[in-house]
Length: 105
Image (cartoon, rainbow, N blue to C red):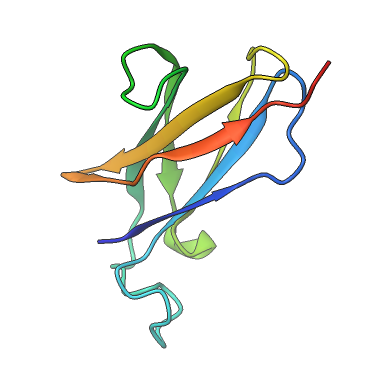
């Protein structure tokens, strides 16, 4: 299964919105990206380093078939003007590491 990484284009000084979509076949004609018609639990982590030695936030979202198995994680209480790394996990799948930055104060 592929986990696609997207991120909010207008971060806040203290937060960002991370987006992803579960889709083994993103262009599948079923509109579900090749996924089964059921909800899937997706975990996310945000760290100060690319190797995730210093995880600063984490959580769980639900990717629902009604929303094309997309996930929007709102992450707050971050430091302004700072670069962060994030990833998503579901089952045995781990996404590539993404990078985002909070806006300056």
